[in-house]
Image 1: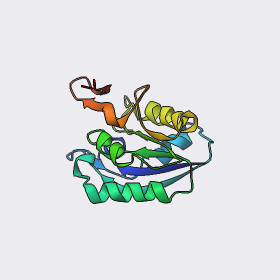
Image 2 (image 1 turned 180 degrees about the vertical axis):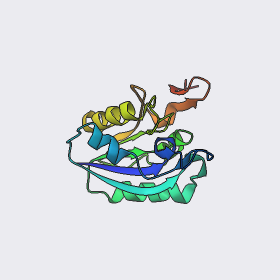
Image 3 (image 1 turned 60 degrees about the vertical axis):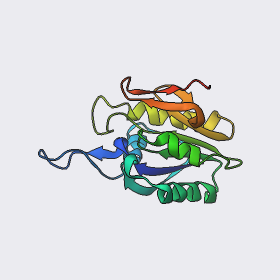
Image 4 (image 1 turned 135 degrees about the vertical axis):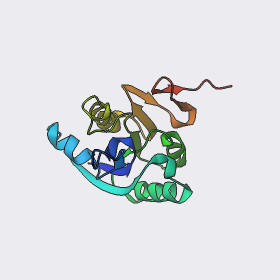
Length: 162
């Protein structure tokens, strides 16, 4: 069983009308899983609908509490990419759980989005990685402690330790 917590972010953004900008809508992951014929046992819980730049310490504490109280040993968290590593660091030290975070650089509702691939990749990672906290983005696994978002490169990169 994989527990999936959604927090919002770009993956869940949608256009509400032709004049508006993207806004965070309902969690995209239930539709992604259904449309891609995913049958791994899972439960989806929407924790919040926020852009990750709006998340604060109280939100991160709520995410941590949800992960800690889950009976599942395998947890997937969808999250906005701007502060994903910050939340990943806040989840460090939860024993006995494989926690994988993912998101998207483009909304799942957009045809050229990376959301579908990232979610599938993260689901696989959550099932095979040992306990710990990971970021699964664009075909790579990262440690939140040593990762940064490369805005110019539109990807995550491992930060060199000094």
